[in-house]
Image 1 (tube, rainbow, N blue to C red):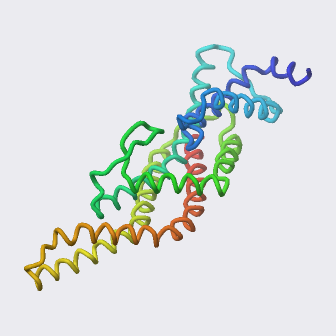
Image 2 (image 1 turned 180 degrees about the horizontal axis):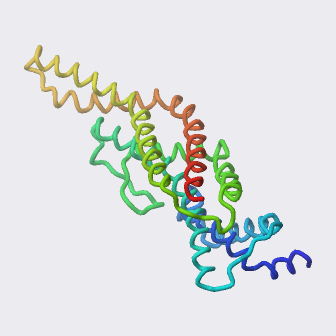
Image 3 (image 1 turned 90 degrees about the horizontal axis):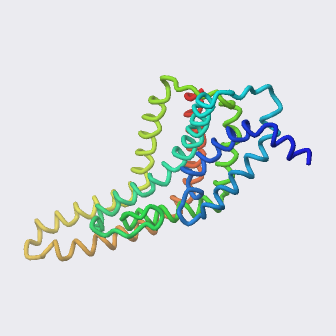
Length: 259
């Protein structure tokens, strides 16, 4: 009963906490997928907000009494949650980008599959990388780290402490460039092998002009690409936890720009 009475007294503070958590569940990987029922998202957001309410309500937080100011504060809290989810989802977009680079090299550029989450056509190898990254992300409890980063965001940006500084755009550009480099590193073994095979076929075309290189080269490039993908899976699995840690660090750096 005491908890319910406290909840009724600080319902305005509860909605501010609920706004940040809701923004997180709208954009965060795994939680934002269509396969997760809306009732589960709302229920989990409500539960987390109800759990954090006693912790956030210990200080002297003055919630705006005017409706317009309160709506602006609520939008700022949702912006923080959306930022956390958006930065973390960029990692999985990078996996699809790396797969698209591989698809273009091995001849799968026109082969797409339907992604049930977004409802769009995605590259074949890119979808494979995405599903593999999602599986590893769940195995190493990456979703727990995301929820923990959501909790720690209140230490960096307290309630109603949102403000956009000049460093936000700089951090966003730096994070985008870093993630593009990660996608190229993931695709580098396959791209390197295909480049070597192209050089070999070029030499064969000069030395043996009677051979139809196009008929021989296309299936050979597919075999070389698939073989290199198979060999690079252990490297991909070992590097993914480090990539996730870097994304968590990028989330905190972006949040510091929103103080």
